[in-house]
Length: 117
Length: 106
Image (tube, rainbow over all chains, first blue to last red; front, side, top):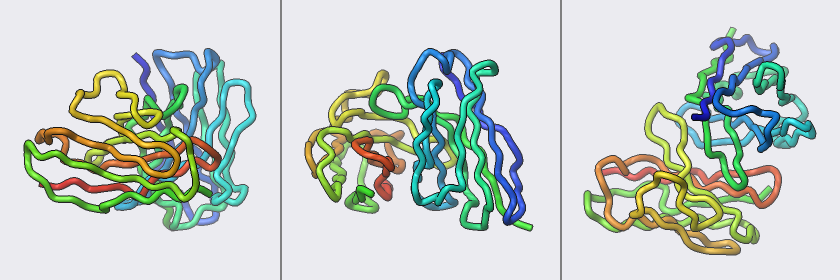
């Protein structure tokens, strides 16, 4: 079955770049659908960060003010997230997900990233 | 951005109760509305997509309805495993947005 798994550092210093990878198994990213990142600050709700497809053309949440890049690596069947100039407000659990025809039908378990010096 | 407002923000209920959660969009989103459930420390799980379509494996006690700006999620008979937080989510326009969540407690 389709599985997603986030990986990356759990601690990032302020003003640095947060980089995460989402490894997809059970489905080839190049076969279709959109792939995105959603985050959740501790004790808060969900925020859509952006998404992309294997064909490129990423769509981002303007609230992230141009700090975010989402891309896919079809050779490794991975999705990546880069968030630049992080602050404490970027501390959150980060989820990757597959957006089927209508909704996010598969999610990774999430990874907590803390921004702190 | 389209704002999604859920009500109530929290709700206390008992096993066997019928529960309705409402989600209101700040503008029309047709039927581009999904519902997820999230348990503490876990990733959200898809319950209903496109307003009223039950996702594979989701029990039939869950149902959704609505269109335009007003949507509801109904649980016909609460089970112990249903006590969790529920989120609505619109994919009508970018940026996609979620409701603030409804916490369902015993």
